[in-house]
Image 1: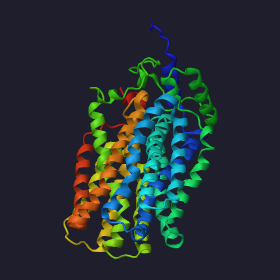
Image 2: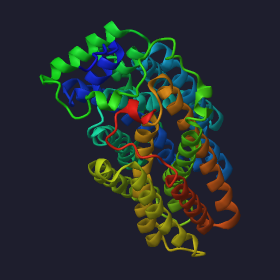
Image 3: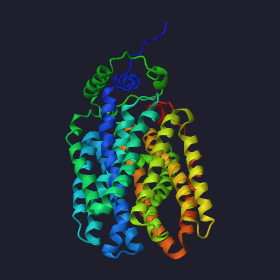
Image 4: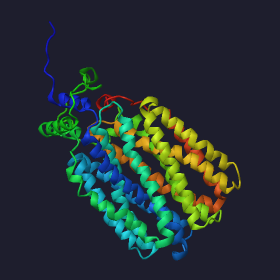
Length: 458
């Protein structure tokens, strides 16, 4: 006879989380957090679409432009690390609410800025909120999902980030030439304040509650998800085979320690994912924030035409993200990373090989490149929370995304200096080389497709 061993309550709860399909509460969480992420992206890109107007008003040079573009990313470094730490202690939902409040209030401050220095100040503070919101939301959405089609569900949430970029491009094209630069900041900040009214209605992450030993609270939330789905527990990855090596969770072993990122178990993953973040966002934000200004100052486009060109580039990225979301659970994260970096890098290297690439070639090839690198910028938000245990998931994602902020702060400044010293072809050559480096890091990634989070983190 087989001996019967009682299942630990934490393991039973985790299996129930895995067993639930995507319910009304999942979709509600995706919509609310996704809307916040939409405005996060909108606020990030706003600076690119007000810059062509601010340059003659405040007599800004290339270095001033680079500093203004980099300002929010400096704040985002601190926000990502601090709020990742805070989310491990007070929960995902309240931490996200705080970041949204900071992002919105400081955005209003940006709209009232009266000088280069004041806008620089408010953008740094706004960046603290922006930097904290996205990694917390990424960890939260990941933790709500079972393994089956997690990538698809998550990337359609992340598509709202790209939609925010498109929204900023579209609104900038329409509003800035007619109403001035200030209105863009108000459009990005004021609606986001309304999201704060919806945040308390979200259910806390049951995985986080389990890690904290709050099993009764976790059970109540899991029951709410089960009830909202109206389904039996017969989904794909809720069987004990996937959890036979998973240790029962207790508050004693659930304490978050950032030093664990460099333990033998996670060290290689940490440096690999940091490399992915740096390469993705050095290219992504460097291209997206500078292209309208390049069209205007290098190729003589009018402000309106420069903004329309930027809009076209961002619309292409949205289409690419939708394609990626439908394929990611079939191809896997590692294959897509490699494909995205190579497809982004080759067009940029072609442009870099020409001393004076024509404007039409720049528009076509950067649009193609940006579409692919944008898919990788979404996949890295999916991948990073997957490869760490719940006890350090938010802080690991926050610290990893701070690599984004560092790269995004350095990238625009590097573009400013490269453009000034060597010309536009040097900028594209730089981005192409970084994309190839990203492809190398992609070969070092571990595959997470269709695996429960607890199995991946073993």
